[in-house]
Length: 222
Image (cartoon, rainbow, N blue to C red):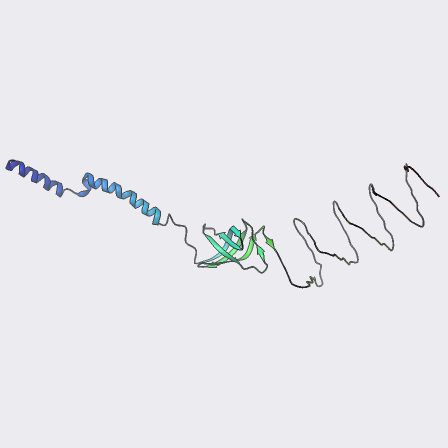
């Protein structure tokens, strides 16, 4: 190899070594490989890939997302799920999609109210319970109904008024004692007795404007 050729190769090597790293193909390939790694790091460890941090102090609504076995989980408006403890004056069992009033600090959260609820409130007291509206009226109202259960029911009142579209009564036996007047007024009356019907009165009158029909195998008068 000639001296001129050696000098030319040395000069080419020197130019390649002096060239900026970013201008070489290897540098461009390395830079292209670095860009995805930067993007992955931002997606994994950046604020965009993490759930919003829990507020230091919070007072506001929370939507119930889990209510099983006494463990209640709500979702705050920012999307953070937190476990809450029920802290109501009355025992309330929330249902899914209920909206509770939640108060909390750091990692302790409590439900102190019900904003929109479809759950159940059970008030259980020991012994006899008397509910008295002093110098006022007591009203029981249910949007879906009122139900009373017990082995015995006793009602004492000066007057009883019942207003209903339909009444269905089922009894094993009924005894009525009316000391004055028993008056029944109806558009139509239909009575069906499976066995024997017996009516006893000191005086009896049957009065109709049109037809009276008596039908039976035997009719005994007198």
